Length: 527
Image (cartoon, rainbow, N blue to C red; front, side, top):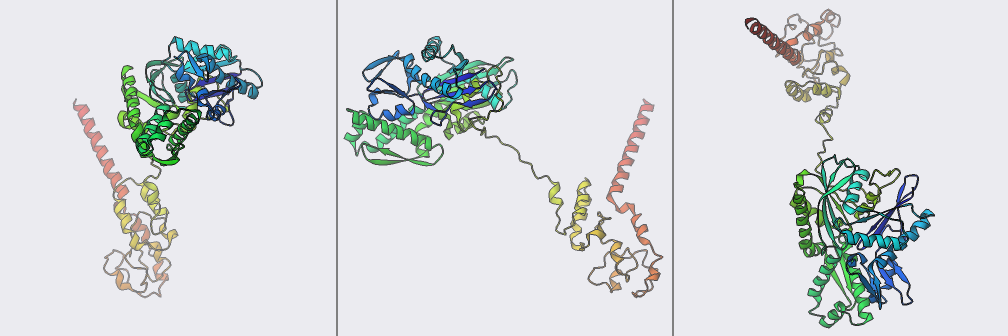
C-alpha cells in the first residue's frame, strides 16, 4: 500500500513515502526533504510556496506569510489585499506535497497520515483535516507528534522501551515548544502528560537576535534602524525580510560553528555574532523549556530517572545549549539526531508496526551522550610483552592466579639470556636452567645457576652456592666431557616440588579442605 506521512510544521513541512514493497524514502523538494511552509500571493493571483515564496517575498513582503501554522487560530490571513481562510492557506502547502507525491510515485497515495501537536484540540485538528481535504488528499489518520517521535525512537533507532516504561519527548520547533511524556503499551504509546509553550520557538530566537542587534546599532543609526524594524514602504519591507533571513541563517550556522556574520542591509554593516552571545540571548527561553519539561515529568508522577530517555526533536533542538541544559538540570543525557526535523514524520509511518525494511534513517544516527566504559585492553596483554622478548614465559605467569609468581617474574630480567627455546620448558624458575650448561661442557653440575654467561671458564663462581652436587666435582678442567655424562642431576633438581609455589599452595589448600571435612564429619557424628 502506498502511504504518505506529512508533518505540517511551523517553519517547514516534511513528508515521507512508503511504497508497496515496504521501502520508505523522504519526499524531496528541490533536492531537500524540508519544504518551507511559506506562502506568497503573486500580483497575478497565483500562489507560490516553499523556497519560491521566500524568494518572492523580497519583492513585496505584504503578500507573504512565512508561518501559516502559527495563524491557525486567526481564522483568515491577509496576503496583499486578499483575505484567505487559514485552511486554504495551509492547503496551498499541502497541494505542493500532493503534486510532488504524484510525480515520484506515479499515482496518488492510498493512505495518508498527518501529525499534529498533542495539545491541539478538536477545532485545530478539524482545520487540519479540512486543509488536507481541500488539497485533494484522502481522509488522513491523525497521529500526535510525540507518538510519532516515540515510534521512531523504538522502531527506527532500535532503542528498547519495555511495556509500562515511559519516554519524554522534547519538541522545540520553529514556532512552539511541546513537552510530552508517553508510556509504552501493548498496542503502542499513550500520552501520560503534556505541556507546551506557544511563545518559544526558533522564530522567537530570531527576534532575540534582532533586539540584540538593535541595542548595539540603534544608537548610531537611529533613523535607519527604525525604518528597518518598522518598514514604511516596499523597499523597507524588503530589507527587513532580508535581515530576518540572514539572522535565521546565522542562528543555524552557530549550531555548527563558533561565530557568524549578519548583514544589516539598511545600515550597510556586517555584525559579528558568536555562539556565546547567542546562547546568552536564548538561555532564558531554553531554561523555560527545561522547566516545562520537568513539570511535565512531574505531572506524569515520574522522576527523570524513571524515564527510559529524553528524545529531542524539532529543528531548534539542534542548538547545543538545549541538550546541555537538560543534562545539567535533569541529570539525564538526552538523545539528539543530526536532522531532528524528520523524526516525527518518519515515526508516523512506524505507528502500528509498519514495515521499514530497506530504509536508512534520514534523521541520522543518535548522538546520545552516554558514559560508556571502554575496557578494551585487559590486564593480560601488557604482561605478554616483556622486555626480554620471550612471549612464552609471561603467558605462563599470567595463567597462575597466585601471588608468588609475581616477584619471580621481576627477578627474571637480569638473568634473561637470548635463548627462548632453552628456557621455554621451565618458565616459572627465576634462575638459569641446566639446559644452558648443555652447550658448555665445562660446567658439568647443572644446579649451578648463578654462573654468569659472560665468564664460562671460571669455576670459582660456582663456589658461593653450596649445592649437594658440587662435592663429586674434583675436576674443574673443561677437558672431561665423558665424565659428566653419568650425572643426570637435572632430574633430581626438578623433583624439588617444595620450591614451586603451585604445588605448595595446592598441598596447603588440600590439607585445609581435609581438615575442614574431618571437622565437619566429627560435628555431624557428634550431633
